[in-house]
Image 1: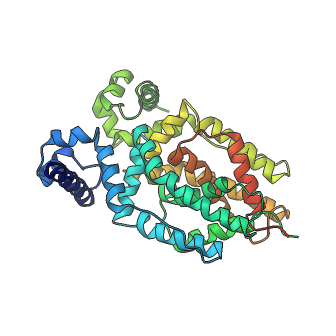
Image 2 (image 1 turned 90 degrees about the horizontal axis):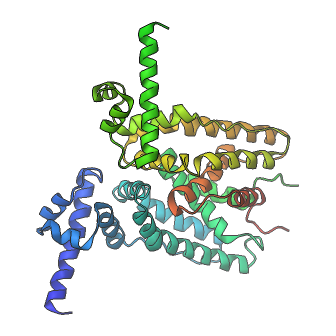
Image 3 (image 1 turned 135 degrees about the vertical axis):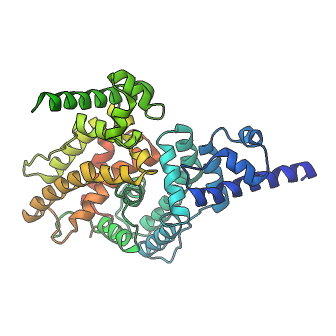
Length: 192
Length: 192
C-alpha cells in the first residue's frame, strides 16, 4: 500500500468509526454528516465523495465494522445448530448497542431502495445462503423431510425473527426463537 | 352533531384525504405538512393541533381511510380460509397504491416508538387476534395439532409475509404465501 492509500484508508476508517459513535450517542434520526465530519476531522465533501447519502454511510459503517457473520456449527444435530446460530444473532442484532442501529438501518431501507439492495447484497443474502447450506446437509442426512423447500424454510425462520424485531417490537428472546424452530419442525397438522 | 362539530369532522377528513393523495403523488419521504395544509385548505397549526408529527398524521390517514380489516371466512377448511385471507391482505397491503405507503409507515415505526405503538394497537394486534380466533376454532375441531401454540403460529405466518415485504423486498405472491402455509402445516421433520 502506498502512503497515500494508507492515509485514505485510515480516513475511511475514522469516518466509519465516528459515524457509529455518534449514532450510538444521538440515534440515527439525529445523526448528521456535519457532526460525523467534525468528529472524524475531515471536510463534509470528503464524506460525500465516497457515500451518496447518510443512509449509505451508515450502512457501510454498520456492516463493515461489526462484520456480522453468523456461522453454523455442525454438531450433527440440525435443530441444536440452528438454535445456537440464532441465539448468537439475537445477542448481536436484537439488543443494544447494535440492535437499535440495525433497526434504524432497516427503517431506512423502507424509504431508500439503494439501501435495501445493499443490505440484502452484503448481509441478508449471504446469511440466508449459510442457513440454506446448513439445512441442505441436514436434509441429505435425513434429518429434514425430503423435498422440503429450504429457501422457504429460511424465509420462515428469518421472518419470525424480523416480525418481532420490526413489527411488534417485543423483546427477542432465546425462548421465542426456540419455540418458532420447534413449531416449524413439528408442523401444525394433527398428528395421527 | 352540532354544526361546529360537523365542520371540524369535515376538516379532519379533508386533511387525511389530502395526506393520502400527496403521499401517493410524491411518496412519504417528500410529503410535507405545508403541502398537506395547502391542499386541504387549512393552516399548518390546524394540523399540528391534532397530530404531533408527520408520521402520526400519515398513520391516521392510512389506517382510518382504508380501514384494512381482513376477516376470515369459515368454510370448515382452515388451510383454505387462511389462504383466502392472506391473498386479500397481499392484494391490499403488498401492492400499489397502498403497499408502498404501508411500507413507508413501517419504516417510520423503526424510528418513532409512538408510531410503532399506534400501528400495533390499531392494526397489527387486532388482526393477530382475528387470526388466532380462526386458528382456535380449527384446533377445537381437530384440524390443527392439539397443543400447538396459536400465537406462535400467527407470528410465523405474519413473519413470512413481513420478511419478504420489509427485508428482501421481493414481490409478494399468492404462490409464496401458499407455500409458507403448506410448509408450516407439514413441518420440517422427516415423515416416517
